[in-house]
Image 1 (cartoon, rainbow, N blue to C red):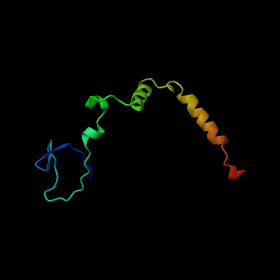
Image 2: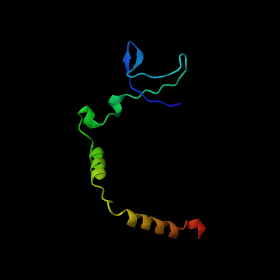
Image 3: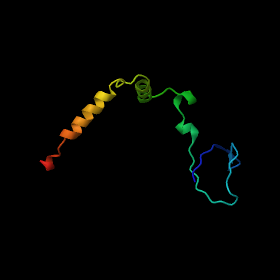
Image 4: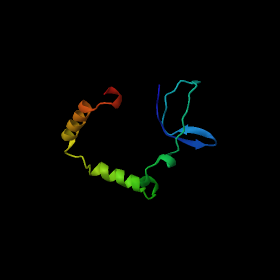
Length: 88
């Protein structure tokens, strides 16, 4: 079973921010992810890195948009014609 839920730390204990249905006495493994370390720069008010800006621009304005079929055709041709040197 894997579930994800948010918690807050209070007096050194993790308190779920929502109702969590877990059997009493169950032993679990907990992975802690600090939201501040994984938050998007827009959420933290920080200036995004150049890579983040580039990735966002490509996501919004894909340079491959409309070329999917052509790209798949080229990939297929490459695979069909590709030969490892040791196979020659």
